[in-house]
Length: 281
Image (cartoon, rainbow, N blue to C red; front, side, top):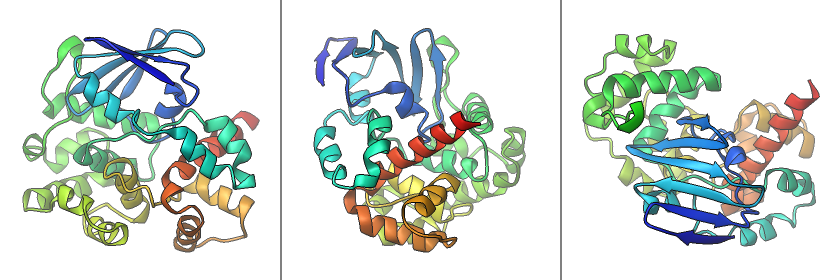
């Protein structure tokens, strides 16, 4: 993969290890929408327009290219990652299917709020709720877009505001978590802790159980040695390993198996299983 940068855009040539559609739809983030032959992608107050020029070439336009170069993890060599995962024979089909997925480096606060909303929820509803919150409390940007609210801006939100956003039972968890952050719970400090300690700290926040904590660690705090287990991964586990219903045991064995490649292995397996099962219906 070759990256050529100008002032306003970068060209990704021969993007064999980057598929924008698969990356965005792999469950890592919720603030994007299709536009023409590509997507508008938002993170915090930053905006990028992604164009799929042809089968191998992608154009990313933004006022902050440095941000999105990091956001899409372009400094990481995915050939090395894939080579390490190819030793697992049972990953072959998932790697072939999902190899264009990259691990997004998202903002901690936004990731936390979005994944509390995601609990037992569907992607269209999550996106609608997040967009409502951005429009009500975030700063306006160009072209009718809004930034994700800062903690100070979110402090103005009430439980009723979150109910109006369609978050349902999660509204009280969102308010409770924001209050804890305002009281000094520091996501940046949590990020620096060993993974298990960081997970224990995150689970002290309202609405943050094991799966949400793993997602926040992986997608917002850059801890790669976690393996979020949802319904799809539970199916994968029973397909690949053994009959098991205890998701704590599943997580433990999956992290022991994949180590520091757990996060990306999870993405490949999750996307492969979900998309193929949907196509069979």
